[in-house]
Length: 236
Image 1 (cartoon, rainbow, N blue to C red):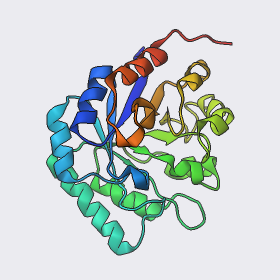
Image 2: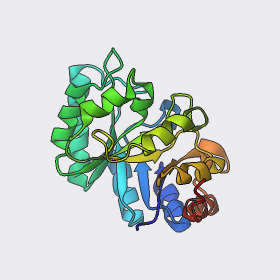
Image 3: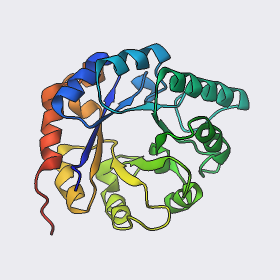
């Protein structure tokens, strides 16, 4: 059985090296955390790719929120995704809602077409969806979709624990085949209960930065997460 996944948000090569040194399995690359994480530049991706050997998942989002924007803005995002692929990106993070709170399938289809052959995560837009189960069924079977990044609630993991446990128990059902990647207000204290529920993938950002988003990723903090998620699971 493979070990649990620890995914760390990286803003630059320094973050990436510290996360790798601490034992992370994968990085999510973003820019502008003041906007909750936007697409990094092609140059930033290239610098990080040169700095580490870890898999890199690149955020595809050009503005704060969970709307894809106008047709013109979506075209720009698709062009950006293609440029990142040309630079060597092989994994991505995306997710958009329409005005009714359902998955924006036009935007998702457009991007999935551009990143054909790549693995991707549907991010925390699911936590703002009007119906989480319906959204999963909308996306079921899309090529490359292998994870949902979710806190179980728009308010964070503490509020979403019951939802996360329930969704982990549905692993393998239609719409629930992608891995549950838990993040968004995730604390070390949450890990034992989540591991006992069957969750085996964890996403951290501010939790591994001793000075918050103003400071770099701390390798020792990543190592503490590595140890916590690798600890033997106690099943109630």
